[in-house]
Length: 190
Image (cartoon, rainbow, N blue to C red; front, side, top):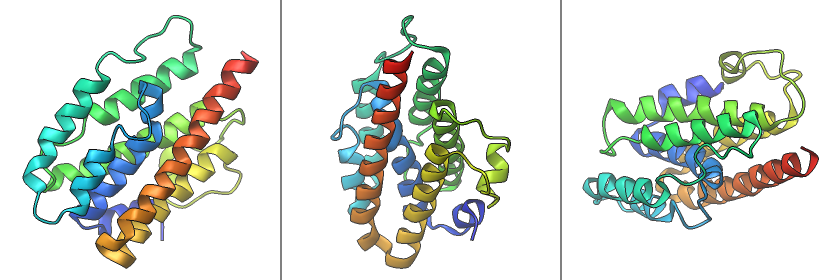
């Protein structure tokens, strides 16, 4: 099943996890660490506390406000990646319910894939929408791994419900480390 189909079928918790996981993998670009989005992950694991989601989103935004924005010493691809990561966080809905979650999950999916494409040394001849629809032949390795992570998170939530959240967080943590390494490698070679 393609990523687009998985997002279309996901329930609210799956959509929130999908958007959060994409944001979490890219939060290092904004100066965040492994704990930055942990309160939001905790909120997803709590069935009854959806109302607190907006408050936690605002706390994260405040914590990362201005971090890593427009560093003149960064190469254009990294500056663009930072801007995309910021947009993901800014687009997070204030409620953990409703149609806004689907839009956020979709926005984050596209932005995270674009970030990985920007930072991947290999060019990609296809557009992001084609990749999300399932056509992955010849996809550069960094972007292909991000696509696999996005699919994995949605499949974990679809198959295991709330019990899949811990594994989804592990997948996201692994992806964050990979992205940090890619940014570091680019900085060394620039």
